[in-house]
Length: 565
Image 1 (cartoon, rainbow, N blue to C red):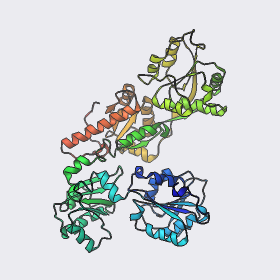
Image 2 (tube, rainbow, N blue to C red):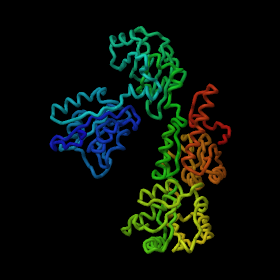
Image 3 (cartoon, rainbow, N blue to C red):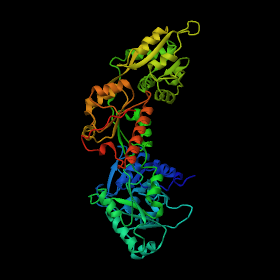
């Protein structure tokens, strides 16, 4: 049994010092996720909260140790609440982090104190642990991945190999002259934690201590996140490299970086091992004009390619204006009126399920009825409801594909000749006509209405029109029309990807140039096609000796060659 599953004395509570890793939320350990799920209060800096809060239960209180998130480590601690169910954590307004933790733990609360990287390497975590120990507050430590280890792994720089050289870790902000002298005299790998505008000074310290100026060096900022960027140079050239890359001078010079010094950070080796930054859509901001529920699996797929999906609903789903037709159809399911029910969308499944719940019904009401579904996501929605579809198109996932596999009505084998078709108010008549041709009677019922969604926030609208997005995925003609209607036309540097010819035609009618088209009408094939486009674009830049950039980084108004896919 893990420590936090044991009941803590109510008067003391319990504190978990948790390592949130270097930035990628996927690097949280299973143990960390478990502790977060049990937490009553989270105490953390602003950037750490962004990593851990998704695993916290609803209603957990958050304690920021930074009053001003733009100036980490300063100001008066603040308390915010995720959900109205929790109104206070009993935390005083002015306390250092150790007092915040202990006060939050009073009354039996379970507190998670999240720190960046690993608690064992955090500057203040040990002091907070000692304060808990002195006050009799029980605590535990959940290790995390330290930035000095995780960032080089994401940058494609191994710290050790079969030769087994020493690895030294140096924090440039607190390193003494003796420390620099020792690492300078060593021929092992040195991992330096510093800031962007202090990298050149750290390199100078190593050279002064005996390291050769031509020793390879990599510098990584934003490590393990899609903002990661790595430069390869030598101790003697790093200052010039950052200047030529127009990284410095910069108002962001105080950003933390991890620098690796040694032969394992040589450019030739890193080119072959840089697995993260070489993802086909690395850092691309991709607009997905679908709701969070619809876009979940698509967004996960885009993240696997290194993209940053941004979901913007263009369609809102509302109940039908007159519910009587839907009510009669659902009652007909129970009384045996139908042989088949055909679902053509996730929204149709949701509409029927909500009506079932309204009447106190569940999946057992489908007993004896054959169920058809168009599309993988529709089938998954049915399975989540407890219904396994009897028929899913073997070919094209569309009404036409469903008709190809749909059996004709046979009065000998089919006791009932009627099909229930719950659909949107704007659905086409293709499926209805095809079923009638096969001998079936169809109850074509409006289960929900689709209306244009509200405009997204002004910041999103400006990004769409101003070229802030690298790509947009259009999954239907209506998403094209609605996005342009509520947010404006995407900028001409934005890559336009369409699910099929009809959607592409609508995009072109709206003045958009189509760069990518899915080989078949599937949102996942569309994402694959965009990733292929991104990889070919990346390879072309490398072969030409040009820097790899995102579409949004191109000069505004620059013309692009039409690409066929």
